[in-house]
Image (cartoon, helix red, strand yellow):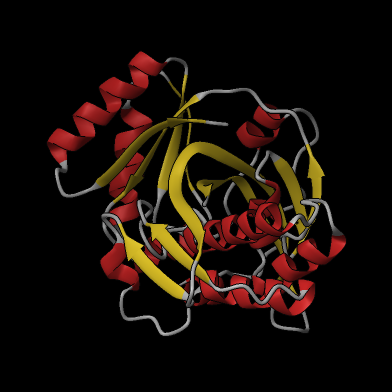
Length: 275
């Protein structure tokens, strides 16, 4: 049995530079990962199986095509492993929420299969599979703070502090395609130079305005996070609707989480740390 974590991904900054001829967008983004998320468990079995548990399992229960099974099949095609697997996805991250849940799950499946069958995690063929599965999957495969360019697949590692962070989602699923379609196509300039915190503080998320237009609840989330004592940065992640706040201390993060849970008991909150 292989148990592989699938931590949530954050875009501490996300600069959209241009729409490409292939329909994708050229990005400059600061990827970071937190200590918590989903979990993928792989167990050799007589027959293939895929089971989803956890508080957000229902959001994926009707899908006939999941990134986890696509990752499994792509690994087999590339590396030639024909063994059957029972895969369990314990889903704790909200679906379609801008924190790379599906991408993290696919990346965890690839890492788990690599461990199970003796493939190197830095094998270029493994990264090529990740790139084909989605723009965020290569970053999730590596799972550390990085600058992403191109579609997000050209990665440069960067050192980052371990800070308390609070993730908040108002229970609204936002379509990534609709958010990108709402981008105003104005290039507001490149990502900053410096360490990760400097880049994050100087940065922005160019997808925030179209996401907020589609889901006004994001305005309320950001207002509550920005009002919390001890916040050094509050921003939306990815295409939304999850927002995050970096805190000066774990105590300040915990106090903010308690305030938000009292004000909005139906919202999802995760107290964690940058990994």
